[in-house]
Amino acid sequence: MITIKEVTSKKGLKAFVKFPFALYDGSKYWVPPIIDQELKTFDKDKNPVFHDAEAKFFLAYRDGEIVGRIAAIINWIEVKQQGIKKMRFGWFDFEDDNEVSKALLDKITEIGKKEGLEFIEGPVGFSNLDKVGVMTEGFDHIGTMITWYNYPYYQEHYKAYGLELSKEYVESKFSFSDIKPETFTKIQDLIKRRYKLEALDFKSSKEIMVYADEMFDVFETSHAKLSSFVAINPEQKAYFKKKFLPFLNPEYVKFVVDNTNKLIAFAIVTPSYAEALQKMNGKLFPFGFRHIIKAKKHSKSVTFYLIGILPEYQNKGVTAIIFNEFYKEFAKKGVQECIRGPELADNTAIHQIWKHFNPQVHKRRCTMSKPIA
Image: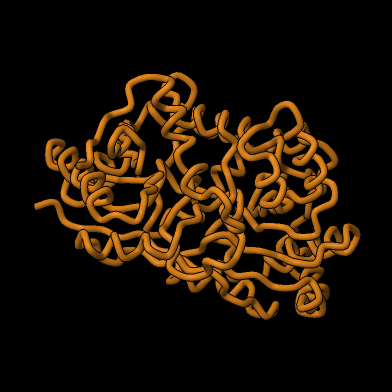
């Protein structure tokens, strides 16, 4: 018999965060989160997302042992301002037992019905800056810091519950050797002159902070038309700056400004932290920092994390400026592999950006949804 219990204590929340460590023990591909960071994500006093959202966390038990978990999330900006009556669920992990997954999803449906919402959808986080999607292909590829990994059986449990495809995402990678600099080196000079643009280089996190708020504004403006978009509040922007800035190499942050110094485009790449996080096994202390620092300095793989271009500058070749800057940095550091995070399969504009680099789709994922009866 499966029992579902809501997490109501710090001890319970830690058990919620640590359950996947047991479920994926021995997996070569699962990338653990940093436990302390994950706990802060769920802390209503520390994560400002809870100003506009609420969440409940549940654990599934069989004979006193934890066999599954799920987070029930309502983003009130999405519900009230956008009119999308969605009951979100995320951080959904479970043993290969349909009784477990059904009991957890029943809890999501129950809450959604009580709140007058129209459908459930997941796995998703609180906003576009969180992890998204259940993997449907690519199980033999290592995960990344910015994605969830799951076993192949997950998708069958979604289908068994009656969930249907909602949004599809693809993840691609390409070799540095497949980058053809002639596709952007000459044109980027022309674009700079035509639109009076300049690329900014950074040597420190302090320099980036000057433009950080503008960066989030550009991100939101450039992504507003996407089907997955939900606005984030100013407090969240400050929270994400603090959370992610330590993982950024300043030289891997590229901004483009106009002749008034207004930010019109940006892109952020991170070193691949996957193997470092596996070695850390969720703990920064006492030695986890060493693995992070080593990866930050020496990783030969990079992950494209965020990119944004103001709508009035899209389709005008601005990406050539960004690619030229990254190409110079990657060449200096001996980068060998470039990995792209999840991108909506129907976002043709973003896919066109990479067409000259021989990208290979190596993972697919999706969110799935079901009406609340």
